[in-house]
Length: 314
Image 1 (cartoon, rainbow, N blue to C red):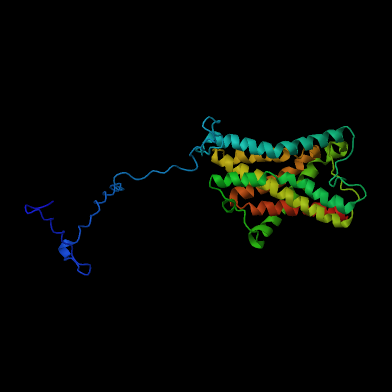
Image 2: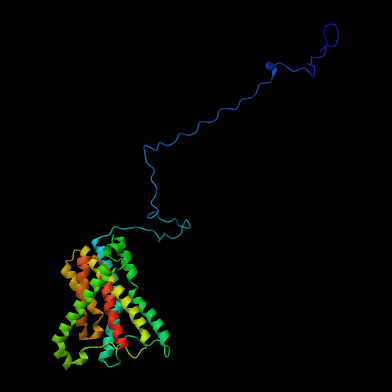
């Protein structure tokens, strides 16, 4: 703007380029706003964190409107009622096929269809193949054994608690031979008592025929003897007697029931099933007294294996 004399105003003063302004002339630096305070941490001492049990937590539905989950795991407490029904189902699964087969064999014997053979012919003109297939066909007899051992372990009775351990000469084989001797002696007494009846009515006894088989069929006999011994002693002794004891049965009542069940699948012998009672009595009492399941298994195996071997090699 011109001044009063009409002269133009002097130009505005500018500092030279090489001149550095003093520090107080530096433009103010904008300070960032203070950061927001973090949220307070939860008080872990006031209320402990609760986590859902993965065993009981329901599965999420795959769709908002899908069906309700059916694979939820709920461990219910074991009661007397559940033990009763469990015992019935396990024994039914073990006994039903065996008893039905025994009744069928007895009916065939009564009607003269044919003798009961120890080694059935599954493959014609192939004895080695028949041996191998026969062993495989007999294994389902012991199919319930793993289930019974698993159920016992769930209630606190693992195999070691049942005395199902590695056999030893002093604790198992020696006493097993004693059980076998007592059984043979008792059977001889029964034969002497029943000999008049058996001589007059030989058809009352159904002898199990071995047939004309090679000597190496001893392997077959040993295999089925081992399968039978494990199946019967684990289920009728180890499982049944333990469950009956847990249900409050006396040892005498449990012994009688176990003998009845043992003889039920030997009815194909006819009246000869009576001769299976002494052995069943001695091995059952042995387990009740000693709680060593390996001993009756060894005794049962040796008892059957000796008889079958003699029948094959004679």
